[in-house]
Image (cartoon, rainbow, N blue to C red; front, side, top):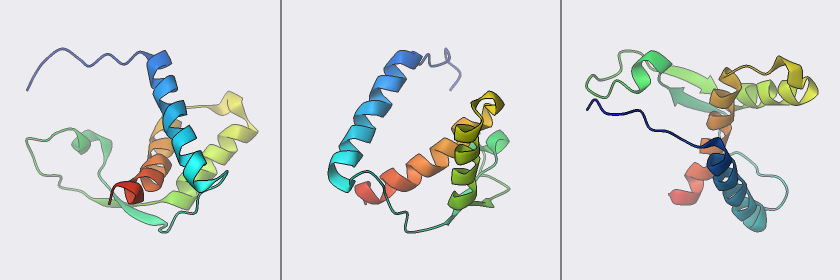
Length: 100
């Protein structure tokens, strides 16, 4: 399974995100309601180790992830890499019901 790392051009990622967000906005309006608050979470060091079953599964909370993003909007100078993980939590919760 070892291969060259996948390279993601950030401008293409930004464009894809914008298109997906426009699609949701066209169908849901300017806000979305998330049906659930809690979700299963696999710690980062186990998440991509697909050769082994995760030993640890924790519980995440969408309202907490969203609060971290709200805090970022209030103070952009406090951005950390983990904001992308919190953003991913929220985006998955928005997108998951649409594919079920």
